[in-house]
Image 1 (cartoon, helix red, strand yellow):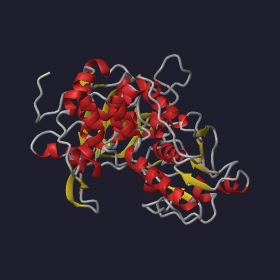
Image 2 (cartoon, rainbow, N blue to C red):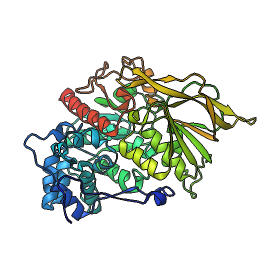
Image 3 (cartoon, helix red, strand yellow):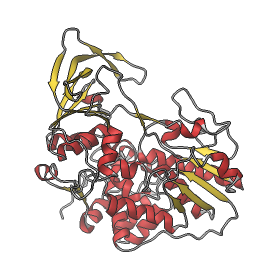
Image 4 (cartoon, rainbow, N blue to C red):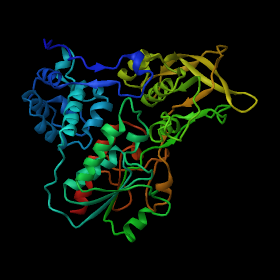
Amino acid sequence: MELDMMKKVPVREQDPLVRAKNFEEVCLGYNEEEARSESMRCLNCKNPKCVEGCPVSIDIPGFIAKVKEGDFKEAAAIIAESSALPAVCGRVCPQESQCEGKCIRGIKGESVSIGKLERFVADWARENGVKPEVHAEKKDKKVAVIGSGPSGLTCAGDLAKMGYDVTIFEALHKAGGVLVYGIPEFRLPKDKVVEPEVENVRALGVKIETDVVIGKAVTIDSLFDEEGFDAVYIASGAGLPRFMNIPGEQALGVYSANEFLTRNNLMKAFREDYDTPIARGKKVVVVGGGNVAMDAARTALRLGAEVHVVYRRSEKELPARAEEVHHAKEEGIIFDLLQNPVEILENEDGWVRGIRIIKMELGEPDESGRRSPVEIPGSEYEIECDTVIMSLGTSPNPLISSTTKGLETNRKKCIVANEEDGATSRKGVFAGGDAVSGAATVILAMGAGRAAARGIDRYLS
């Protein structure tokens, strides 16, 4: 393979016209030759900015150097020191704004494909039966982790490596949190990627109990008082969807992106052999512009719909990853930008028949620095559709905070926790991930899990 040091080794993908009709993984990743070629582009910087850009501080130059040597087992061991979910992160992390965004190679050319190399190493380790190892002496301390998403799995894995007796409590019937219910198969295969990574955390000695809703029959108080846990980490995520509160939002055929994706991803509504159907619209409007909106839109497309993404700002302001927007466009998603819904229209049976839209223009920047969208008077029009998916973000479910004494929350119902160690206002209770920050990325949740594991270790020591 002839290598251009200024450009990334291209990654193979399914053809857009083919993948738009299946749920197989879009990106096919690197093979051994491609991975070693891409690793040769790494400058092995003495002061690696890429590590600074990684929320879990993976030794990126270290693992890439091992890939260059062809020592993939050692590369996997280096990654495992910092990340419990490398195959996940290699697929869904926003590397372009984190590690790859800091890559020195990217100043004069394209940054090194750190994410694709991490994915290659993780996939190689799984395919070759490489498992994480625990060397720490067992400690006589029990820690409960609430939630088995990326933050909970990371915190549990790190604590297990330190020798703690760790139990994860998961509300759903399957472990993985947002990794199993939120992210579609074509971006993150469940059987091939998520389940093996969850099993790797189990292999560290972590126990996982599913179908346990903390805040109902079991509370944080009972975990301390009746079950003898010494510390608790809350990583329950942010699964409460937001809506616009516009007329017609209660019509049949209106979904939150959370419900729509959960039915498809966790309950396999897209498969004919699963008895968990979902109303499949012929023309679907997705409201929102983040990664979840792209996931919902691309899922609806694969279910056979014509799909429009309605977003109130311009393409430049789309919060979704550039790669996800690019893939959506390739597959045929239609983007109606600088437009915003004002009403959902119903037929006489109460089902969605359309959506009324008003056109927008960008005004002055808001608090986040993005230019605020302003309505253009008299520009309203209607789009015919039979399904509307609202993808406007999510908030933490207040069940845990409302049933736990002494746990401080903010006005957004997020748990207040110290960023450095996850400590909350309640002694022995730590929190992190989306339950604290509101909806964010997988890797930021993992970073919070690592910080909390260190904080819990200090507290119990």
